Amino acid sequence: MSFFELWRSMKEREELLKRANERRLLPSQLKRLLTDAGVRAALQETKMASLLPPVGTETFRRFTPASLEEIQRQQARKKQVPADDRPKPASDLEAGKPLPFFYGNRPPELQNIPLEELDPFYQSQKTFIVLGKGNIVHRFNAESVFYLLSAFNPLRTVAIRMLIHSYPLLVNEYLINCATI
Image (cartoon, rainbow, N blue to C red; front, side, top):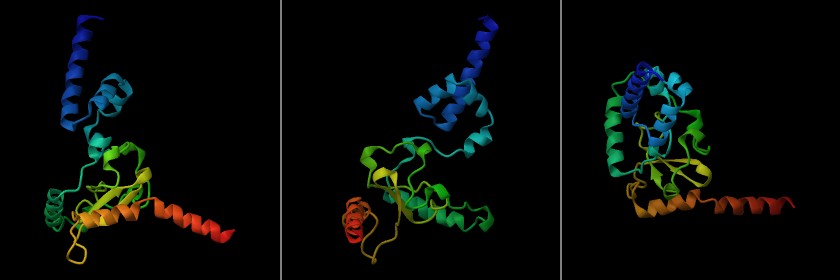
């Protein structure tokens, strides 16, 4: 390898590292980006890279009171945006469907825990998601229930866990199977 080729590859690597820092890539993604020339060539167009959905478990954030405040700020901004420019609901993030594979596996400690919305359409609405067994997406309203139970109330959290638990589904299937025999 000549000096010129070494210098050029170092400059290319520095530029990739700079872009990766701007995009906040994980170390595993950065390693894949630096080693695979095909991936590097595909991501040269930065506009295209910004349109890609987030990848990996860093996208899963707990739903907190600060998240709710951010939603309220987004609602105020949403009123200023024309209806044609607003995002449409993502068909692969519908409630009851499994989470798309490119989000990766959610950490086990985030099962049945309220998370911030992943769908850009719902991010400006008062909703949150809960990922159940099998990474099934369950969407809930963050408004207070009966003007008493906020989204962070322990009683409501327990009710949500009971609602999305797979045991009632198994009992329901068992009863249907017994009735058909």
